[in-house]
Image (cartoon, rainbow, N blue to C red; front, side):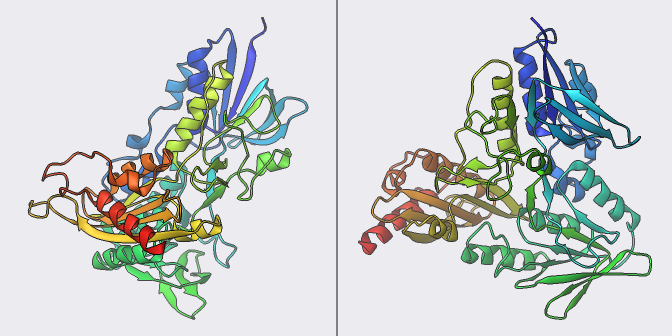
Length: 462
């Protein structure tokens, strides 16, 4: 029987998880695996980049889970600094370009995995290409930022501007403060952390100001100003304000990197992400799979397809894809949109729908917000914790939970994530048998208190 050929495009979480899982199921005599990665690194934690920049993680290599050499030792032909520039679906081959030499070649495949990831959104603004303007999505991006920071290390009065106040923007702002920069965050929304409702984002805004981060809401960036060497010197806004900067970090968000898929005519969703079935097989294509930050996934709460780029999902996608390629069976049923972050000692978490998500989905709902403590109130480590909960009218189905609070707050969102996945009502959440001891929670855990208040809101709404 002829050896099958698998080509994997992308050498990070989804791509190399797929390659590794396929190799576990089929040896080199059955399956030849070739993987292409355009960057310098494989199998790394992009989520850890802010903590490397901020100094909590000592070095770049601490973020790397598996090196190219380790993958090659498992009989995976991993080719670094090689970009796939064209897919020939009819011919079953990909065209690659060596980014160092410029040479090009075609490689044939029987099965194809697209794990091209996402890229930072770079608005089309004057000066956006200035030296010192960085998007941070890959480890290569992180290294370029670190190179810029280290060139000005030790200089007094260093200033940084972060454009955008989502997860990466907020985390990078804290990292830059830790490196001694004077930091300003510019964002268009009413409050930072648009992944939360504005009332919960207010708590994040307060915490950022408390740690010395200047946060400017409603700020529309119009231009990056350059000095005579082509380096960034300031960021200008529509209001006519200028914010001096030695470095600019773009934290506006990311978009799926799907130019290859689009060029080959593969199906894409509203966000531009690749559309797959439950086995992560590209819709309408028997021998092509896709996963990671370049795909859209099913939102189990709203019932629609969404682009939710997270490393947790990417690794799971890779396992599912590798099983399918290797002759096994697995599915990825969808997500509820769980994410956690922190600003200094303030922990931030959300799962499920925000108010605007629920409205967009055509759902009628009630909300309830409570403030409690992370432990028994009398325990020495007790910290404030605010929980907001959304539930559907009539059915009482839990729709979403947001949490902002001190140490011990964020991971409580996992309770809500399980409840959302199970389709539980808030009445059922109230009855959950959660663990209690004074060092861990009040007698009534804050999640249960929020659920009780939400039940009352449902009754009041009729």
